Length: 387
Picture 1 (cartoon, one colour):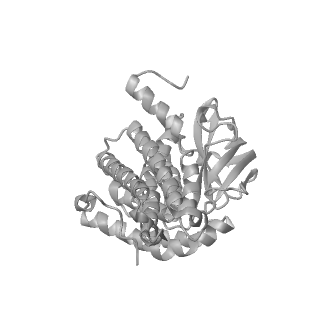
Picture 2 (cartoon, helix red, strand yellow; picture 1 turned 90 degrees about the horizontal axis):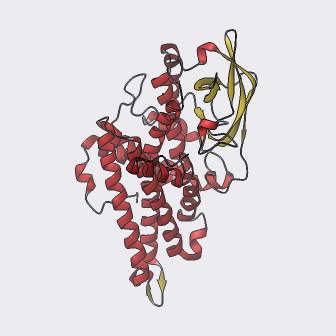
């Protein structure tokens, strides 16, 4: 039996038929294609690349883009799709978030017509994979301090630097690399096989094991001048991309929480201790109620955020609030679910522990919990909190 959803406040009634259809289609895909293989992928520490053409066929790559073969779905439908993917695994949702928000979006928004024609159709069809090179070994929360630099050399740019914790790093056919050119942050399309460019997988991860994570090395990497994103200039450009990804994360975290809640609820009904199901004990019921309450609140945040995004009225601080709240909520739900599952909860026969360790990463990447706290604090007080 497939996943039926968690919807205590009847939010389904607010969705359009198309939004429900998209959600249900991705839900079925996760049940049939992701969950049967994710345990092995997680344990092996590899991304299940066999899912890429299947996700492309469903229209999940370039999902909100109406051009270049994109599905052109609305913001809420996209969020629901990310919710269902992360119900499967954070690594699967991360692949789509990067491909959509951090690769397709910057090429479409900042790229030249030639760059768009060359890359967008292939990225949307899943024939090419991209990654986003912003974070560096010494510069995570402060990307403006990046040390990667670009220098002009005739018809080329010479790039030097290292990027770290890059999703899709070793899978990528093209990397969106951010570097300082004459002191100004610019974006470059660096293609696989370019001389002086290489990628290496980060091994021994205890979280996001089913995600391809690596480092990018640029050693006198010669990039043709045609590969400069002409309309990307300054730190605002990569931050605009991050807002797209953070929006998907806010929805995705709800999916992980839903998976943990549903698993814990069913387990509590079936697990017999002291001659009755543990769901009958008040302490267990309290945990389930806390999970359901927080999931419901996060769902309401996501729905309103989706409305604002679709109307082009969303603020980056609102996305920060949603990412901050929903990931912390999901992490708490995963912990409570593992607690209810007891010793069984630490095995990959159940999903809670996998979600728990994955969410430790989601809590940190795309802006840490504390950084989003400071973003919101600065916004509501009008006082800059970073410097």
